[in-house]
Length: 96
Image (cartoon, rainbow, N blue to C red):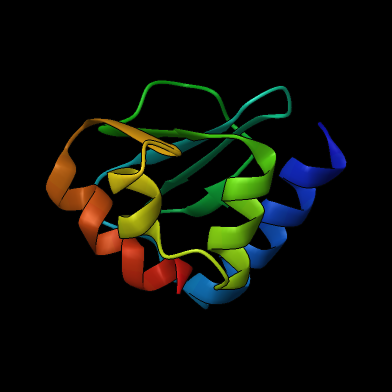
């Protein structure tokens, strides 16, 4: 597991504060790996999910740190979303 994925899992679990989400979302960080969030929280996991979001490392770190708005990243093509768009929108507040 890359350092980026490990740090993302830690940060996302802190933001989730012990809670999971209904459904599953996978963040694919290009050239680094994947982070999956589900009812159990965040983990380094590349299994199937209801929604898959793909971004490069810089965009993902910017979203996670609050410097990049996920909606703006999506609209500008820096964030690709496949699957359940409603679930993706719910996670926007988690990343902020």
